[in-house]
Amino acid sequence: MAVDFADKFHDQTGEKWALRNTKLRFSRKLIFMTSVLACFSWQLRKISSESDPIEQTVEAALSHLLSYLSRPPLEILADELLRGSVPSSTCCKIMCSYDEFLSILSDEKLRDELVQLPRELAEKNVLFQRIRNLSHTFRDGLIEWLFDANLEMFPLVKDYGLF
Image (cartoon, one colour):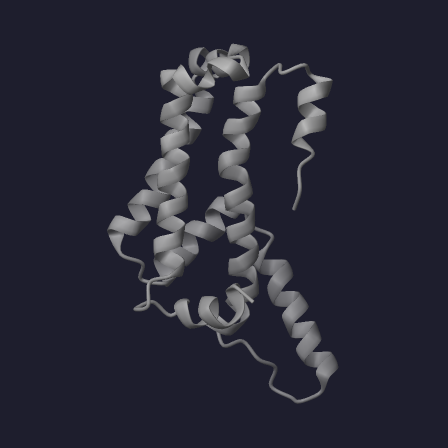
């Protein structure tokens, strides 16, 4: 997953920089997390084929992943938070920050402020800093969830998530 941010910045001479940055702060994390969850979902659900042939196992895996990924990423994330008995404080960090991010983007006045905000003023802009802090809360919630040794996902993160 990569974005040629420099090229986009050059092409648009900085137009919409803050809006694009805001979206990327959340969407990259959400897409990455959805991919991790999809990979781990097979093991978390202990899904297996009744018979031994590899072809049937591959077919079962493909069927599972197609079904799993047919949902919107935010729905997948919410479903896994509920299934995984994730503490409510961690769920709130993740979902409340994402919800506030969406509410900012749906507010035309705030969205326009982001569209017009030049890169050199972002550091001092209250709205941009609010979004930046929200993205850090979202990230911190995801990290808490992934590295909570009391949750069933932790062994998978430890064994497969890093190396």
